[in-house]
Amino acid sequence: MTGVERAARPGVTGAPPAHPFARALPLFLFAGLCLSSLDTTAKYLVRDHSLLLVVWARYTGQMLVVTPFALHRAGPNFWRTRRLGLQLVRSSMLLIATVSFFAALRYLPLAEASAITFLAPILIVLLSGPLLGERPTLGRWIASITGFIGILILLRPGSSVFHPATLLLLITALSNAFYQILTRKLLHESAHTTLFYSALVGMLLLSLALPWTIGDSTPTWRGGALILLLGLFAGFGHWAMIGAFLRAPASLLTPFTYLQMVWAIGYGYLIFDQLPDRWSAVGMTVIVASGLLLALQERQQALLTSRHRH
Image (cartoon, rainbow, N blue to C red; front, side):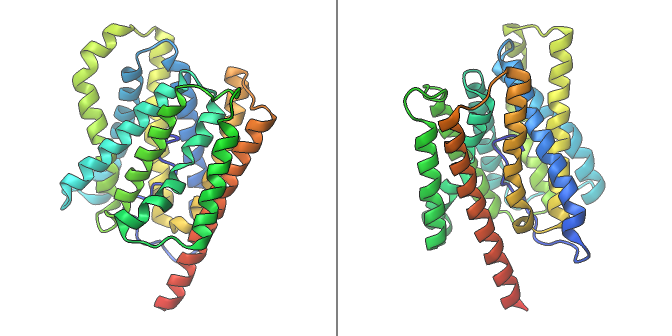
């Protein structure tokens, strides 16, 4: 996932019993590296290229990789769905999140921007009651409040993310939260079908706008190569992530999502010469800790539910 899809679990309901974690973790970590590389490449490209061109490359790359994968694994009817409207709304939420995130990267440091997108799981806790009928536990509330404290530290006046573009990151987090909530409503759909529809709206709409988008900035050979690389990062990142979730339960893998912050900080320093200052690092740490706490609680709840079923 780009920074905006980190906790998505499209349609995966089970995993093989034999050593699922050992088989899935390398795929999941590779997916995280690809998606962090995607964010980094996007930040580099949006400085000199049309935003919509960059987003188009991201979705087209995903479609070119995952469509043959879905065709091979699920057969020629992989695109058939009983919840077409829900699939398209979910795909639209992902498109909004991606456009907002890439636009914000023009103005904000990579690591801090990535940290704010981790607000999405916290927003899911707040929205799960009215939208899913779930009652948040005390632990979820504590994790959510902790995450908001981290956001306040990160957004303090004078910080590198005290900028109007931060509003785009809040739109990113909110859209991603809706995207993940809709994913939960599609658990009975094939994982390959849901993965295909994840990129469909973005690719179709942006392909229609492509003739006007290219006119804004003609890519150089170097820019064209990076645009191709961007698409490959998106495609293989999503391929690896779905492969991981097909092999192991999401509750085992999700805590490792937060390792992507390490990649974001490293890329920010190596490519853009940007490092978080002391208080920004504190805020990012608080946000990641709250999200990790939330993920570990979900894992414990999943284990308890599994024991009760047996």
